[in-house]
Length: 140
Image (spheres, rainbow, N blue to C red):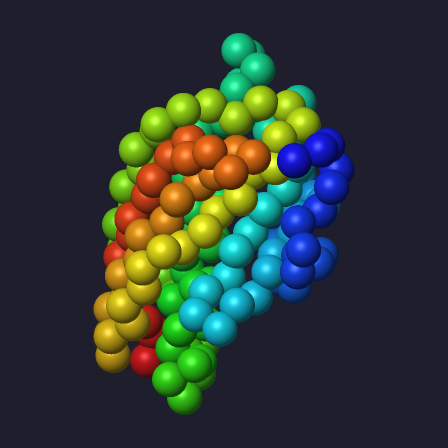
Protein backbone atom coordinates (compact mmCIF):
# COMPACT_ATOMS: atom_id res chain seq x y z
CA UNK A 1 0.00 0.00 0.00
CA UNK A 2 1.34 3.43 -0.84
CA UNK A 3 1.53 6.04 1.88
CA UNK A 4 -1.76 7.84 2.46
CA UNK A 5 -3.72 5.65 0.02
CA UNK A 6 -6.93 5.06 1.96
CA UNK A 7 -8.31 1.52 1.45
CA UNK A 8 -11.62 1.28 -0.36
CA UNK A 9 -14.71 1.74 1.81
CA UNK A 10 -12.97 3.58 4.65
CA UNK A 11 -14.23 7.01 5.72
CA UNK A 12 -13.50 9.31 8.66
CA UNK A 13 -14.36 7.39 11.83
CA UNK A 14 -17.95 7.91 12.94
CA UNK A 15 -17.23 7.82 16.66
CA UNK A 16 -15.19 10.53 18.34
CA UNK A 17 -13.78 10.57 21.86
CA UNK A 18 -11.16 12.47 23.78
CA UNK A 19 -9.12 9.28 24.00
CA UNK A 20 -8.93 8.69 20.25
CA UNK A 21 -8.63 12.37 19.24
CA UNK A 22 -4.79 12.20 19.29
CA UNK A 23 -4.92 9.31 16.80
CA UNK A 24 -6.67 11.44 14.15
CA UNK A 25 -7.15 11.15 11.34
CA UNK A 26 -8.84 7.87 12.23
CA UNK A 27 -10.90 5.90 9.70
CA UNK A 28 -13.43 3.10 9.81
CA UNK A 29 -15.30 0.80 7.48
CA UNK A 30 -18.67 -0.59 8.57
CA UNK A 31 -19.38 -4.07 7.26
CA UNK A 32 -22.42 -6.28 7.82
CA UNK A 33 -20.76 -8.20 10.64
CA UNK A 34 -18.03 -5.93 12.00
CA UNK A 35 -16.33 -2.55 12.11
CA UNK A 36 -12.76 -2.15 10.92
CA UNK A 37 -10.72 0.78 12.25
CA UNK A 38 -7.51 2.10 10.75
CA UNK A 39 -4.98 4.90 10.65
CA UNK A 40 -1.70 5.76 8.99
CA UNK A 41 1.08 5.34 11.52
CA UNK A 42 2.84 8.58 12.43
CA UNK A 43 5.73 9.28 14.79
CA UNK A 44 3.25 10.23 17.54
CA UNK A 45 1.90 6.63 17.42
CA UNK A 46 5.31 5.04 17.93
CA UNK A 47 7.63 4.17 20.78
CA UNK A 48 11.25 5.33 21.09
CA UNK A 49 12.40 2.54 18.74
CA UNK A 50 10.10 3.73 15.95
CA UNK A 51 7.57 0.88 16.22
CA UNK A 52 3.81 1.28 16.68
CA UNK A 53 3.32 1.55 20.45
CA UNK A 54 1.77 -1.51 22.09
CA UNK A 55 -0.72 0.71 23.91
CA UNK A 56 -2.01 2.09 20.62
CA UNK A 57 -2.26 -1.40 19.13
CA UNK A 58 -4.16 -2.69 22.16
CA UNK A 59 -6.52 0.29 22.31
CA UNK A 60 -7.21 0.03 18.57
CA UNK A 61 -8.05 -3.65 19.00
CA UNK A 62 -10.33 -2.87 21.97
CA UNK A 63 -12.21 -0.24 19.95
CA UNK A 64 -12.55 -2.44 16.86
CA UNK A 65 -13.76 -5.44 18.88
CA UNK A 66 -16.23 -3.46 20.98
CA UNK A 67 -17.75 -1.70 17.98
CA UNK A 68 -17.87 -5.02 16.10
CA UNK A 69 -19.79 -6.62 18.97
CA UNK A 70 -22.29 -3.76 18.86
CA UNK A 71 -22.56 -4.08 15.06
CA UNK A 72 -23.20 -7.83 15.36
CA UNK A 73 -25.92 -7.27 17.98
CA UNK A 74 -27.53 -4.59 15.78
CA UNK A 75 -27.61 -7.06 12.88
CA UNK A 76 -29.58 -9.35 15.21
CA UNK A 77 -32.11 -6.61 16.01
CA UNK A 78 -30.62 -5.59 19.35
CA UNK A 79 -29.59 -2.05 20.28
CA UNK A 80 -27.01 -2.17 23.09
CA UNK A 81 -26.30 1.17 24.76
CA UNK A 82 -22.57 0.41 24.71
CA UNK A 83 -20.19 -2.14 26.13
CA UNK A 84 -17.73 -2.23 29.01
CA UNK A 85 -14.47 -4.13 28.59
CA UNK A 86 -14.13 -6.88 31.22
CA UNK A 87 -10.91 -8.44 29.96
CA UNK A 88 -8.52 -7.80 27.11
CA UNK A 89 -5.53 -9.81 25.95
CA UNK A 90 -3.04 -8.85 23.25
CA UNK A 91 -0.22 -10.92 21.79
CA UNK A 92 2.33 -9.05 19.70
CA UNK A 93 3.55 -10.80 16.55
CA UNK A 94 5.46 -8.11 14.69
CA UNK A 95 5.95 -4.38 14.32
CA UNK A 96 4.34 -1.49 12.52
CA UNK A 97 6.33 1.50 11.31
CA UNK A 98 5.69 5.13 10.39
CA UNK A 99 3.74 5.44 7.14
CA UNK A 100 2.12 2.01 7.30
CA UNK A 101 -1.65 1.48 7.34
CA UNK A 102 -2.54 0.08 10.78
CA UNK A 103 -5.93 -1.65 10.91
CA UNK A 104 -7.93 -3.54 13.52
CA UNK A 105 -10.07 -6.27 11.95
CA UNK A 106 -12.35 -8.35 14.14
CA UNK A 107 -12.63 -11.90 12.85
CA UNK A 108 -14.90 -13.46 15.49
CA UNK A 109 -17.79 -12.04 17.51
CA UNK A 110 -20.26 -13.69 19.83
CA UNK A 111 -22.81 -11.38 21.39
CA UNK A 112 -24.72 -12.86 24.27
CA UNK A 113 -27.45 -11.28 26.40
CA UNK A 114 -25.12 -9.96 29.10
CA UNK A 115 -21.61 -10.83 27.83
CA UNK A 116 -19.99 -10.46 24.40
CA UNK A 117 -16.74 -11.98 23.12
CA UNK A 118 -14.48 -10.96 20.24
CA UNK A 119 -11.16 -11.75 18.61
CA UNK A 120 -9.21 -9.44 16.29
CA UNK A 121 -6.08 -9.17 14.22
CA UNK A 122 -4.10 -5.95 13.98
CA UNK A 123 -2.44 -5.55 10.60
CA UNK A 124 0.29 -3.20 9.35
CA UNK A 125 0.06 -2.91 5.57
CA UNK A 126 -1.78 -6.26 5.57
CA UNK A 127 0.70 -8.19 7.73
CA UNK A 128 -0.41 -9.39 11.16
CA UNK A 129 1.45 -7.64 13.97
CA UNK A 130 -0.86 -8.52 16.87
CA UNK A 131 -3.84 -10.61 17.82
CA UNK A 132 -6.26 -9.75 20.58
CA UNK A 133 -9.29 -11.12 22.35
CA UNK A 134 -11.73 -9.46 24.70
CA UNK A 135 -14.78 -10.04 26.84
CA UNK A 136 -17.33 -7.24 27.21
CA UNK A 137 -20.22 -6.64 29.61
CA UNK A 138 -23.45 -5.67 27.89
CA UNK A 139 -25.13 -3.13 30.20
CA UNK A 140 -28.87 -3.50 30.75
